[in-house]
Amino acid sequence: MPELPEVETIKRVIEPQIKGLTITDVEVRRPEVVAYPDADGFCKRLAGQTIGGMTCRGKFLGFFSEGGDHVILHLRMTGCLLVALADFPEEKHTHVVFRLSDGRELRFSDTRRFGRFWLLKKDEEDTYSGIGKLGLEPFDEGLTAGYLAGRLGKRKKAVKECLLDQGIIAGIGNIYSDEILFAAGIYPARPADSLGQREWERLAVAIPERLSYFIEVNKMTAEEYLETKGQDYRNTPFLKVYGHEGDPCPVCGNTLCRMVVGGRGSVYCPVCQKDVE
Image (cartoon, rainbow, N blue to C red; front, side, top):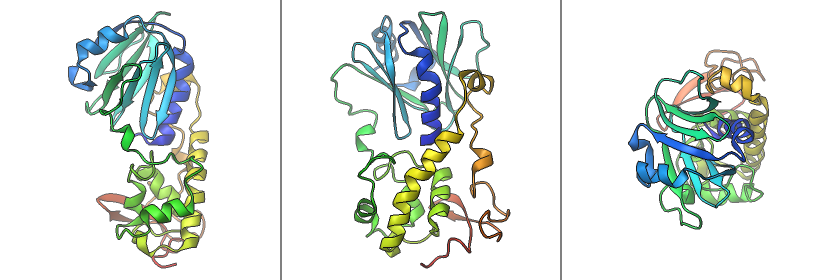
């Protein structure tokens, strides 16, 4: 599932291509991907609207019209957005096509069909998408050691599981929780209530620093994004621990290990991330 750095990359690539264009027509081929309203209402409401820009909140993407309506999208596991000329070959499992006034199309494809759209009218309360339940953004000034300790410091769950709680911090998934905990020197299975002040401070620094770093290394042009069909991000060579089970730790050289925390595979260094402070 795309996490915040990937979602931000998509926004940075797609927004300059669609901003200011008018949606001339919308085709929904799989009605179930439109969670609200129904597919017919979704298409009729958007036709003729001009795109004012895009938004990013946690793992949610969105674009808003100049009239104030707001489309929200969660890509889930395999969702993908592409902007292409009308005669550019479509990806398999293309479920929604927004035809644009410059002759191009904004296409949504999704192999597993878990991705969902919501369309909110101007000033309509969002009680549908779940965005209102999200916690702080990783770059919010309020994300401090005090905030983390206050929200998580009494939990007996593993700190890795706590980082995945979108109601506390929005946008972190399995990949970047491993990278954040490695940078902070914290063992993934440590109960959150066992962390001390210094560890909360390291975590508060590592969260925005690591996510900012991966947003930067993910940078690509619109041409590069289209060429890779929006599926090949740049971060893989820069991951320190995720996906590197059995490799030497980039800091101490000891072998990286893998365990399961809360049903998720987690890679860590047993030396740099001891299970006690």
